[in-house]
Length: 72
Image (cartoon, rainbow, N blue to C red; front, side, top):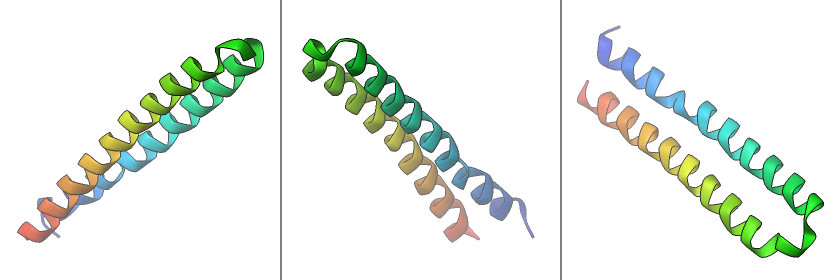
């Protein structure tokens, strides 16, 4: 096993961080909406933006993993 394969495996682990980030954003958004229902639209927008940014990090990690894996 060479280091590129190891790097690809580690890069795939960014999905775990993204999942945690998305979960925290959804949880925080739900709690904020429960506390201030009148601000639901702005809270939802910010929560969705946070989820999108976390998912983008996971996609970048997947791309890096694929690039390292195909380089082998």
